[in-house]
Length: 99
View 1: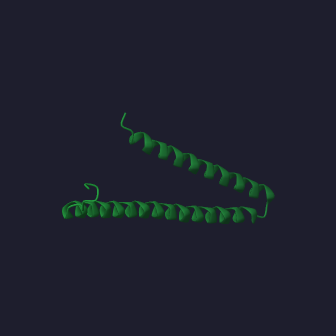
View 2 (view 1 turned 90 degrees about the vertical axis):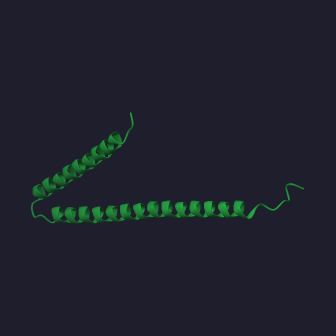
View 3 (view 1 turned 180 degrees about the horizontal axis):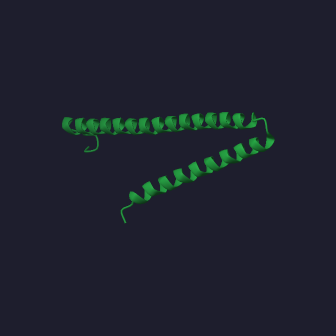
């Protein structure tokens, strides 16, 4: 009847402490993930709003040629920002490698 023997109090207490620490750690990790996703969503929303406002200003210009040049300039700036962001992201990833 070794299987039905009650565990010692110290064994069950240490298991409870370990399980509690594990749960707290998982909650903290979940909080970081949710917080990061929330911040990324807010940044995406702000970026979209700024881009829409800039496009409205370009479309409101009186001359069609000036409006087209303005929209093309917006596209070029957006492409430059995306490429700069990607190169910075890859530079961080390259610096963090342990080769």
